[in-house]
Amino acid sequence: MSPLRRRLMFGIPLAVVVVGGAGFYTILRRMQENAYDPHALPSPLIGKKLPVFALPGADGGQGFANTDLLSLPKPVLVNWFASWCVPCLQEAPMLAKLAKAGLEIWGIAYQDQPGDLANFIAANGNPYTRLAADASGLTAINWGVYGVPETYLVDRTGVVRWRYAGALTDDVVSGTLQPLLQQYA
Image (cartoon, rainbow, N blue to C red; front, side, top):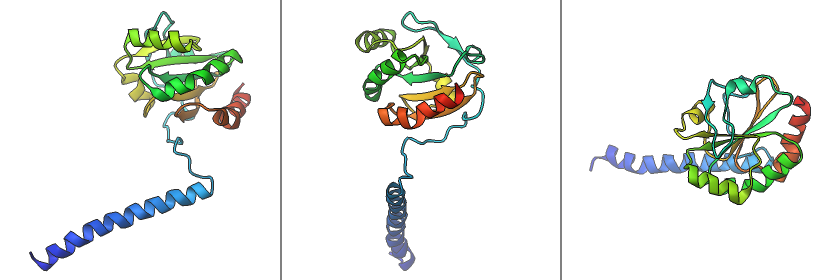
């Protein structure tokens, strides 16, 4: 084996360790500063109108399109979920609590089977004012959905004001969502 090849065999794993260590150190530093949020994924929709879409209703619910979100009396949450999603199951009580408090939530079932969706709704309740299905997943791609659950706050003019990847919790609702709801009411 040539000396250059030996150096490369030693240097490449060393470089991987250095880069990994630097990334780990950066995450630890941000966690200490309370500046690390693994749910804070960038969204190209923030501050913009929703992409053009039209989705059929699901589980007897009324579907919706981007035009339905253009002139609303108050902001709404659009919640992407699926029956096969464990965090969606954990999030269900929070969505029910928000709906009971008067927040309008529109749901989009992501790549779900009708029977599985019906069982999920029957077991966990239906907090959705409107319920649509994105069976193909193409609308999710246009929205920039990384995975379910994901929740978007859409203001009265159809502009996306906030996005949260993951299950909504009391801390997220009280610390982030409630102030935004007051701001865009």
